[in-house]
Image (cartoon, rainbow, N blue to C red):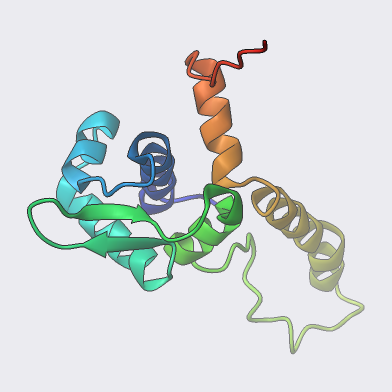
Length: 148
């Protein structure tokens, strides 16, 4: 399985949105500029994300996009499934007619299915909030705690 530009850019743009929006609308042009991604390309990506209910949009001069859910409720897997489709590494078309005694079936069960399970387990265990927190930690943007 190879994640396309659409999946990679979409995830980058959502992390950027979560980091910089503070709950307010953000123009795609500002995300595009920070991430060095075409605004036209992001419009296509965000259209799919909006239809899937991951972001919402407001039209007009002060409009833009904002997250439709809390970052802790958006999993990397949710985003990738919207932008990439099913997260599989091997074709499942032959599954129904496959002889369970064949080498092909053995590979499916012992290799391909297990790799796919781990991929799904990984992308469904990481949230947008996790990515935002890691980004902020790496960039010295963590919230300071003051104790009295």
